[in-house]
Figure 1 (tube, rainbow, N blue to C red):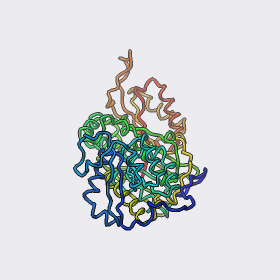
Figure 2 (tube, rainbow, N blue to C red):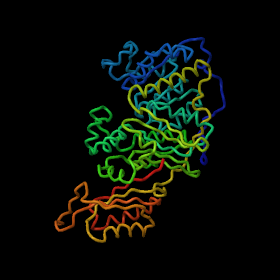
Figure 3 (cartoon, rainbow, N blue to C red):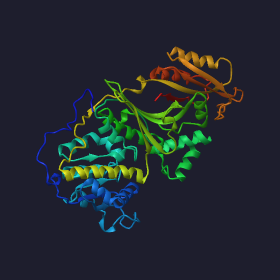
Figure 4 (tube, helix red, strand yellow):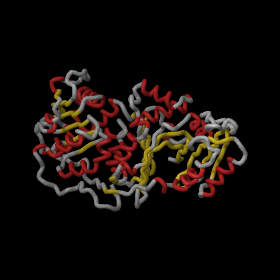
Length: 468
């Protein structure tokens, strides 16, 4: 990928003598070691078993699972697993010279990072679906793999069964990606879809998602936006050649969204989606994850339930949409097994190490949130008395924020009650407005001033508006 500024990580070292692993193998099987056998790992084993003949034809050699690392040897596993290959010792995978490909589906940073590094250092190809690890250490791991001339493949880390990594790495290799707009978390998308379609509260929609297995018992990683942020950082490596710190990516979740926000969004012609947004601005990039209003007729507005979608904007090709199931055992396993096939085929053909060849990843500045320009949806719960709407409009205008549309409706859906001793205060109503394009810092200045007004009953609801 093409980027500017900062010393690049060297992902294109001078070639050196190939290891025995990368020599033509004469039809010898590719031996696989699996680190982890949870939901995704079980799906991987199932696909490898069910499609063994077809995969052998595609790879040119058989693919054989030699060892599977688990925590509990007695736990029930998928029927496709030969329990004789189970072990609790990961060294039996990463240190076994007979194993060609290490597949990491255990998740987390520790011990996954150290095990992947050891596997790379021992000349093994690596396949991982670990978005957290890649977001934190992806550039360094890719550089390490390139230096050893082995493959590090990670299609399953973003979008489940959606082939977005291959699309960026291969299909867009001759173009310049200018923008990424994506729905990357199925839990958030399901909850927002149910809130919009049924009028359910966030809490009720979350409970439904948990009952169906779409949300974890502790859903924080999903509903607070961190899962999508990790995935956006991985996409930014390929789309913008960017090495960034996760702390620089503005991340907010969906807990603050209320039923009223869906109703007002619909009234203005929008729907609410939790989006991951990236833009290449030349001297910097824009990376942010947050709830967003998008036009009801846009393609992303119609991505519902647990589905994911990534909308790419190429300088030459224009818009391109990749869409499908973004989570679950088999969708993610499809991506992982596809990576296994690619890595195995490279090893068998004597051309290992091509996955990261040609990638240039550099540190890039992320534009501060206060400097972005957007339109905004603002909902205020205020006292129903003369002059309030004028004060709101005047304060925004004084800060340089122009109003495009404004409506008042009451009483507030949240039933905001007067603060202590306020029995004589007027009932609260909703004032909802849409701004013209404005710099976020100016909007925040206006909201800080409005927050000091006595007529304001509860914190403002702010959502950015995008036109993907």
